Length: 243
Image (cartoon, rainbow, N blue to C red; front, side):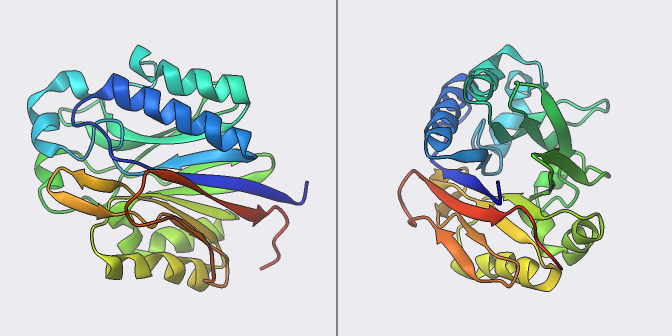
């Protein structure tokens, strides 16, 4: 296989509805797999919605990788033999939770965990920052993980390229179109495929602008979603890239 299809899923999560959102995400994983995708990426905090007040007040909205409420997504990965990149509020060993990406593999196994390193604004009052870069491998392709404000720091993508990652997956929430310029810049400056998953509609204080997409290593847009519709956007990544 000389290419891999990757999907970014955008939708409007129900505030605080972990189980309902997990079922919706599982449906996207199955649809993406049916269209040939090996990996499905979701936006920032799509398991709960970007509801910082709720997350600060209700510890039942925090999850662990073996939380039974994640089983719909895990089962969808097993059934389709594909991977899912799920972003949520997760317990840590400290007092504060993290904004976390769990990557579940084709057998439903946890491939990696990544905790957002660069928190933004009020996130610093609710969450603890991570300290370790996120990496995983699938079908011989190395992936890097980043979450929203992380993408404002080019050293993450620089380290990903230095670690022989080919694809940079960004789970995000944006409401301003000019903020999206960072994604083709990361692709172009570091020779990476960049996949961006956003929300649509209201999530917490933000009215998300959609436009989830994929850029090639030269910064060229390869795929883009609509600004206001829940949907999947799929793009191809070459599995043998020379930099």
